[in-house]
Image 1: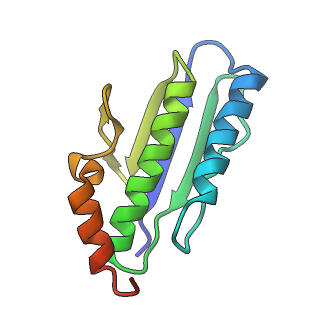
Image 2 (image 1 turned 90 degrees about the vertical axis):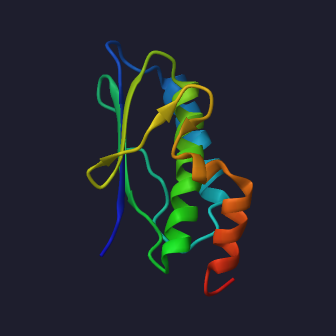
Length: 126
């Protein structure tokens, strides 16, 4: 069963073309370094005040899903920080992804180098 990552950003005034370009550039950088076979991060064409998208997390095994989610949380953290004044909602299916001002989106385990290394080692195809 596919696990989906949903994300959206909104604010009271429109994003500028420059802001949208910066957001898309950050997404492109993270897509280029995504090490798994799965959908890449996309940003739908913004309306007057929002960016949004959905992607399917890698499904090869639970370790790859975990690592893929960690990668996309880092990407969305950078995009959020590049768009001041936006209000974000990020979810894995129906579960909200936590935001921490100091470290960004995700759970502590996704930022722990030892846990990430272990997950990489446990992947069947690594």
